[in-house]
Amino acid sequence: NAGVTQTPKFQVLKTGQSMTLQCAQDMNHEYMSWYRQDPGMGLRLIHYSVGAGITDQGEVPNGYNVSRSTTEDFPLRLLSAAPSQTSVYFCASRIAGHTGELFFGEGSRLTVL
Amino acid sequence: GIQVEQSPPDLILQEGANSTLRCNFSDSVNNLQWFHQNPWGQLINLFYIPSGTKQNGRLSATTVATERYSLLYISSSQTTDSGVYFCAVVKRAGNQFYFGTGTSLTVIP
Image (tube, rainbow over the protein chains, first blue to last red):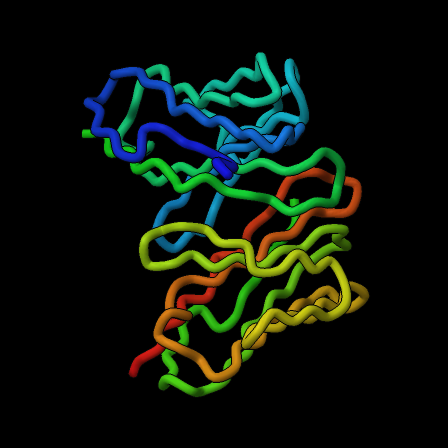
């Protein structure tokens, strides 16, 4: 019953460092996505993927890269972290198409100093 | 995109009281979900409800897609209902979820 698994849960970076947030799901979902949550702003979509080899930008993609080499995994890369990227990051997945419930991981809290 | 507005932004209830949370959206949708974010930050699925009415225990939801709104009802509130409630929609012919800014609910004993 793993569902959507995110690692790490907490991370502190210095400005300019790089890191990868990992996301894996075991529900055979085609659609995967990354959100960031900032106080008072709800959840905003960073990048999403509708299947292996296919990715697209969401509302706030700048400063983030993604790739989707397998159905199960959808890592989010910060190439040069900035303080503005301090946030809580959520990975989510669902079946392909317009319908289907979205399921979230437990979140990763990132602080950039 | 699509605009998703939730009201009220904040709500304080006495334990046992009832409440109604509202979600308005600016365009036709074919997917709508309600989530509860608990004080530990976890996002929990409450309802998948692009149209119609559903009930789950003390919670129920109604979506009137033609009028572009959804309502979440909480009856006999408990302190464990505290947290932030989010509405999220997928625009018709789209595949991205857009979230409202949430309703922060505090239930006091």
